[in-house]
Amino acid sequence: MKNTRTRLALALVAVSTAALALAGCASSADPLDGGSAGGDATGDSSSIVIGSQAYYSNEIIAEIYAQALEGAGFTVERQFNIGQRDAYLPSLEDGSIDLFPEYTGNLLQYYVPDAKATTSDDVYAALKDALPEGLTVLDQSPATDQDSYNVTAAFAKENSLSSIEDLAGLPGLVLGGAPELETRPYGPSGLKELYGVDVTFNPTADTTVAELVAGNIQVANVYSADPRIKTNDLVTLADPKGLFLASNVVPLVNADVADKIAEVINPVSAALTPEGLVALNVESTDDQRSAKDIAKDWLAANNLG
Image (cartoon, rainbow, N blue to C red; front, side):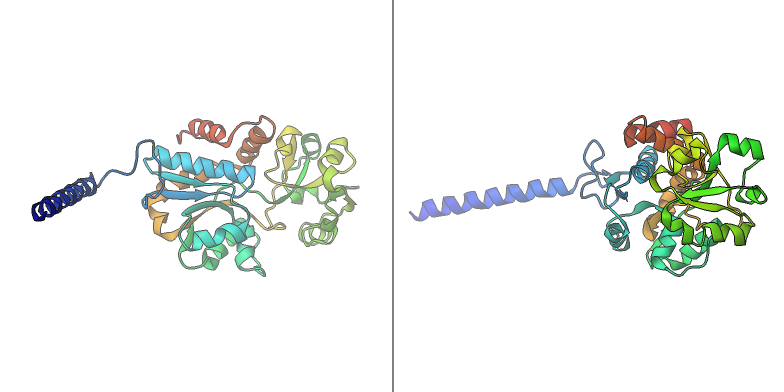
């Protein structure tokens, strides 16, 4: 009986020793191994986690960031369609998400509701100062997603229009937009005070673009990345005096990863133009293409893939 217990004890020691040896082999794997085959970043602390809003245009930009980084050799984890700022900003602030496509003006107002900056450069500078510790922004893009004034291409050509200030002196202008535009600081009163443009207001709401195309209004308040700008041949008028709060596309990043991804992301931002963002949105809404395919083709077309 005693011999039996001895043999059993020795067997258990042997099994334990073998298990420890196997564990030691596993832990001595190549330290440069970035993860499992296929680029699965789950549980990989070196991966770049990219988020997006639950908004097709934002997801396209996030996918462009993701594919650009993957093309540069980074491991990427996607956490798309999260929701609005209250849902995702805490994850950026605690480091759970590293990179997120944002919009300068709207993000500035989130942190500083009474901010006075309106022009693109001023908003960008104010935003960098307003961000909480641990967050920063890379280069802003020329592309925007913000309020803008638009006219038809025919009306622009007929009156040599390229800027809001070119509207000054034109008679009989009717401005269309959401009902609340009438009392907004960038509505009729702002047009008059900042640019000397006189308009009457028509609350066209959801029919604004249709009313513009039909000629019932001459100026329409439309978001600058709205795909209907391209599909209806509209011209977005420049706003050099900052009537609208500038809201340029900007990469919001965790400060710990900013330096190592800037070389990849900044050229992406530089290449993304206002017209280009509208065209990407058309591919999503009208052509029904996936964000993955849209991003792949855009990167290739811009020699960034």
